[in-house]
Amino acid sequence: MTNLEKYDKAFIDAFNVAAEDLPNLKYQDIAAWDSVGHMSLMANIEDSFDIMMEVEDIMDFSSYAHGKEILKANYEVDIEG
Amino acid sequence: MIFDLGKFAGNTALIAENETLTYEDLKIRSEEISGAAGGRCLIFLFCKNSVASVAGYVGFMNRGIVPLMIDADLDLDLVKNLLQLYRPKYLWLPENLRENYSAYEKIYERDGYNLLATNAETFALNEKLALLMTTSGSTGSPKFVRQSYENILANTKSIVEYLQIGESERSITNLPMNYVYGLSIINTHIFSGGSIVLTEKTLFQKEFWQALKNNSVTNLNGVPYTFEMLQRLRFFRMDLPTLKFITQAGGKLDPETHLKLDRQEIFCNVRRGGGYCANGLSACRKIA
Image 1 (cartoon, one colour):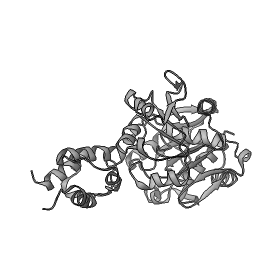
Image 2 (cartoon, chains in turn cyan, red):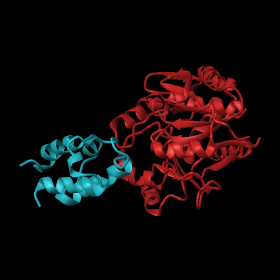
Image 3 (cartoon, chains in turn yellow, blue):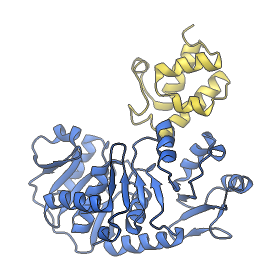
Image 4 (cartoon, chains in turn green, blue):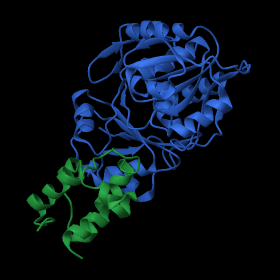
């Protein structure tokens, strides 16, 4: 699996959303991405990329798009590459 | 009357992002809102952690108007089903939901909320009935629990006494008010002259923690899952000097969390052994 596929799968598994809805997805946009959903998403991402997320990043992780930037900047995980 | 607002007139009651209400303000606001609905009837209260929602609730309770508490984000089809089943006289809801109920007449508005008249043929209400709420929070289950005035007062008093909630106590809304324990926080604080910071932000947003710190919140309340989130956020390492106690509804704190609290020597049980009262409430208080 590519990083993008892993990243998408983390969202799809956590929220049961369609892949085409991901690019514009933001925290609390959908019922599934509430604080409980956020816990699952963070766990999925940590498992997929074998990283430990910092608290600041967990709180900053406000959208699908911004999450990519966080992973690239702070965890050396390049989703688009 | 459930809430004696006049007794605490000068105290701060509600702190929202853009405004702060004293008890005097809350009295005026809540009476104005409930006055628009007139006398005893059933009303659907679309809950948010906002001034309009809380002031509406307080006013309805004091005027003998029975709110059926639903999540403002509840699915429209589920709400329509409930409307058919319960036939409320009014809806008190955020303005942005108004378009979903265009057949109903808007008779009043305040703080981003509208009061809509359904003109439905309503049912007679038992005189003891105070409010209706789900036990399951945000699901659309049509089965609502009935709470009497007597029951709410007894519950509120027992928690106030157990947690020693007084005028200096200040909480923050991290649970929805359509959820039993979320509403209990509002009841206990407004009953005793304390204050509540109103926010729609969650534990996973910086703004929540800023609001907690900036407003010197003294207590935090949650459900078991809240504590998993707090662990994830390394709550036990946060510097929150004004926080005096934390509570959890739905049984005892799990042993691991409890151990952590003890080990940090930050919090200890209010009561030795068990430390939870009849409401399934578990509480920890700061030692120092």
